[in-house]
Image 1 (cartoon, protein in one colour):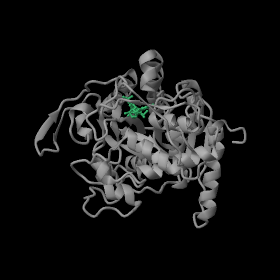
Image 2: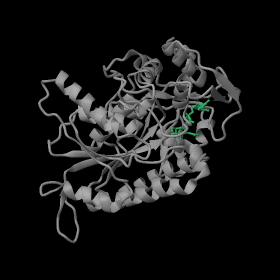
Image 3: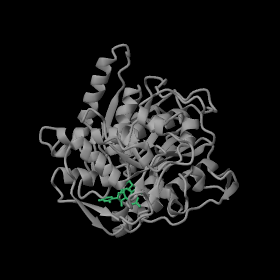
Length: 443
Ligand code: UD1
């Protein structure tokens, strides 16, 4: 069943439902683009690279694939702590397939992989040393000017479970924050100052519960900001955050704040913070998907475990929310749409097409679907029943979380193209093609 638009929680404005469900790639005519066009295809010298940290994880692997398909060379680093090495081969297979189907494109980009922990500064420096060149960005250091072939970084590597972070905060602060500062220092040393950060809607904290409409970037800022709210009134947002529900959430907010401080102190930095809503789905090939190590917390991986009979039932955390059916409502976004958001961000950042040198963007569809609607959509595509166990609310959960995606539409020329049903179909395809996930001995 296609979850009907009228059963989803709709934003006051804009109504992106037709876009989210049409698969159309035609830009909307009513959007005023402040910049001529942000190129999604790489138009860069063949010897420049994007550095992707955590590039074998769920979102990292999909983004790496789309970067390569768009013509970017990629240096991928990953410590394999929550990912599988077979993902690398699968990306290569998909890239090869793409370029054999597009023989007119004569530049097949390069994918280089180094297995390191991004927090290992020595190992990172050894890699960055290999990408120095005499012809690019200046590096001011005691050894004289140096340049890097790495034109920008997309940083995914981080721990990502809010629940786990409550049990063990220090590893989260150590990995997500302390290592992050080391990464920025190192990149700065090499003159690599274009940075796209994996942030999260979690930075909105308690504001999610207080707002009756989709949440805007202006609700969480790092410098005081005046903006026009949905009710047409001019409001002041003071820098800071309220009601963050986990150490994980705090690390995301703090990383954003650090990046915001950095661009004030050093005008050479350009930073984009992408605030993800709820990524689901996977590449339609069924070769890439989501397969977290250990017990998953997020909805879709748990649903998949139930469909694989690895769990007896899906626990529904709360049926008494003030929503259509009482279950939580989320802005589910297909991971390929999310990946394309990174391409739009890196293109804007590397071509100086950002309003400000630190710019945050919501990556969401602007549409909400309930937990039960996602379950129904998965039942429809799999033609199987998903056993449910109704339980109490999960602590730290919000009732409704929906993006106001207008800023990314206007400034990055990006919007979602795929529906919740598309996501469910693709997830089910991955599930049927990989009954054991990436642990399949043949993978
Ligand atoms: C969570 C994080 C968010 C993070 C995102 C992706 C919180 C408060 N937020 O979002 O910061 O960026 O994951 O990692 O933790 N649900 C069930 N049963 C389950 C699992 C989930 O009913 O077994 C429900 C939840 O109660 C929620 C919805 O499904 O209503 C989505 O949950 P989940 O996938 O964990 O994402 P979020 O909590 O929205």
